[in-house]
Image 1 (cartoon, rainbow, N blue to C red):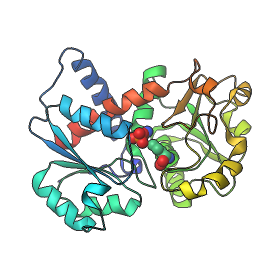
Image 2 (cartoon, rainbow, N blue to C red):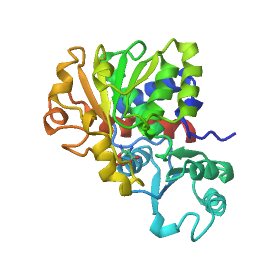
Image 3 (cartoon, helix red, strand yellow):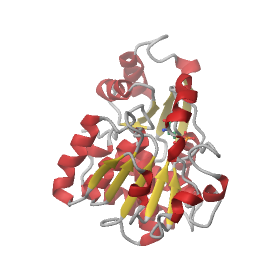
Length: 306
Ligand code: CP
Ligand code: NVA
């Protein structure tokens, strides 16, 4: 049976650690070899409706390092749902490639690709979730602290796709997460409810607030992301005003002597959700997160296609 990776909430705690440990093992193996042959001859289609630097490059490099190849298909190339239906694209790709990684606007598009594809489908970011990002972030937390369970993570900004996947991961892994968003920009109710249900098994504490200072107090990690996600560009000016008190800057960090690490999935909008000083400062681990995208996606590919 094929396995997809659509939502972080679909994984078990063991499933997440399996990916994290595989990422660490493959990274170590690649120190000695330029190329491994676990996925020799396998092909990955990258179906992207939205732009990308990190996700595209890390998937392309990761599959190549495992002996396979990637084919990048932009919206301009294939016109998902316009030139051809999602179902027809999924059925055709299944005849040629071994896996599809899809970056979509509507979450339903990635769900439909998975429904109609005979090959595994990986969510490479949808409007609802960004599971590969959250897995790389938990690998990064593991790298810097040597543990994940019991840490406290503050999310400052928009209750968006990255926040949703991190929150589901937190609930599964036993990470305490304090989410500060302006009123009306909280994560979606059904994701919060799902996280709270998952947290019952892990004892993770998931809390929502509209006060960034309250969120950072006692947290060890602080995470932010753009105020305007891809697809929301028309609201950018309105959102800038709504989020003005949610900037991660030196003043906010002064309230948080416990904060050791600052995280951002990137791309960053310097001077908006985060200042240069903090993004480039000694507590920033954003480039470790970016590097770990490659390690974690290599592991995901090896597990799903191996
Ligand atoms: N963090 C992330 O997914 O970056 P890209 O949008 O550049 O892929
Ligand atoms: N929340 C951002 C993440 C980018 C990687 C977006 O969806 O645009």
